[in-house]
Amino acid sequence: MTHVRVINPNTALAMTAAIGRRARAVASPGTLVTAVSPAMGPESIESHYDEALAVPGVLAEIAAGEREGVDAYVIACFGDPGLDAARELATGPVIGVAEAAMHAATLVGRRFSVVTTLARTTGRAWELAHRYGFAAACAGVHACDVPVLALEEPPARKAVIELCAAALERDGSDVIVLGCAGMADFCAEVSRVTGVPVIEGVGAATRFAESLAALGLRTSTRGEYARPLPKRYSGLLRDFTI
Image 1 (spheres, rainbow, N blue to C red):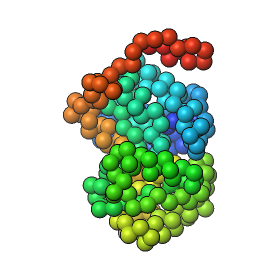
Image 2: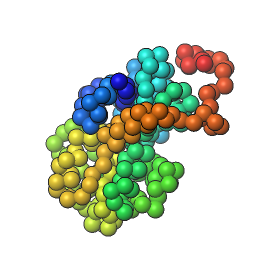
Image 3: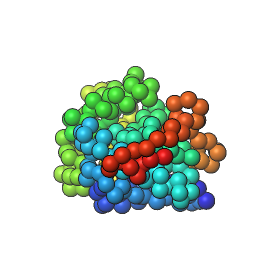
Image 4: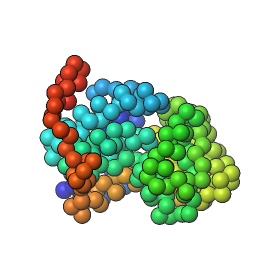
């Protein structure tokens, strides 16, 4: 049985539960999905500061997964925090939800629009689109200005759906990418209203992760993603000594 661990980098347990439900809904029958939150970190990730302080918790969960024999990992935050570092630690593949969603979007359409939460996070989405090689396919990044923890409230769903429809018209795109793991439950409704494929990264990343594990593929350790050099870490980071 393939074991995929989905790591919500924030500490909002209700969001972690929702992310886990989405991942299990799309996973293959032979795949075990566990969804976890770090014991330390921000309750939501909406800034570079939040993202930086979320990374140690993500790496702690990767280390715990390695002790438990986890086969593959998903980092369930659209900023893909700690993705490179996690790949240095994990035996199996590690997939970020932004990376997976953008890949999937290019397989079902020509150009995609990203709809995310706060306007201050749009720069990070563009940065990742360039890094992953999808800047030409990304027609626009749009913010609904709803905080992450407010996505569970009914007005948030309405705001996201309306912005998705507007983004398609403004950008001339044919696919929507939902730019927050907390929007995972919105897919079906947004697709019904807009009539286009809607990609949320949790499901896409879960399927990519289990597929790579089933194929026996893992992150290459030649060069940049080799195991970190052993050294001591001090103070609050002493437990991260390798």
